[in-house]
Image (cartoon, rainbow, N blue to C red; front, side, top):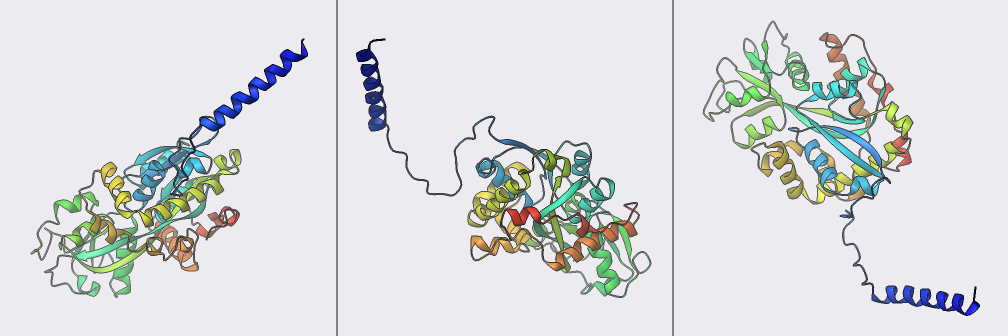
Length: 349
């Protein structure tokens, strides 16, 4: 080949590269830590996330993961599967239809008692359960429930809290107090009159947010007792074996979701309200999320998705309650199913 031709070819290529460089506009610097760039297909690890559509705080965090590029920035691409409650979400986990789930302490204990192929990798949130009466009810304390009827969703953390409150007040559930199974959605048909002293045959109710928060915001209830649930991020061990980096990647993305939610409450609430189709305003959502310290953290660095010692007691109380009620067949120690190594690798609190 003629050397001059080769030299001319190289020179032409150099001039073309210089021209592209000179005439390509500079991209603006990012002003947010939340990227809007679309993920490149084939370069991200697939993950199937199971979440609960009507469950506040968890719902906002899920929406942040859905609407931002936090997962993609951490090497993940998600398929989201929404469920109405913990039991059907557990069924999906048992069927290997999801890889990671957002769930409360009791459904997590139920799943782990049936299938030890799941592991708790972090704390999802704290959320409220409440025991409440009409504002004009003559009942002032839990002890006043003697001889009364209380409606509550059986098998839920609200039942656990309500029965413990009765026992702590010196009452014997089932003897001194009649406790009946009443679904959380059925309560809305009863709690309508701010002047009520009783709800049909029900003297009091127990439930979990956002429903009690909505009642509270409308002035329809007065709380007798408020309890805390430790909700959890639970991941499939089989999925971790196939994708060993995924727990750290996911926890980093989830930590970022808390940062976004904390600094963009209005937007996060709007996304949740839109998908859940709940008739809510930001006020009851603020009541519901009031127990979660991450949303009032002074700085983003103060966000914690790990556990404190008291969390393990609440989680164990959940498992013990289920066994005592005959809802699970064997006793389990919840702490045995917690793996904090992924949080440590991610250098997160």
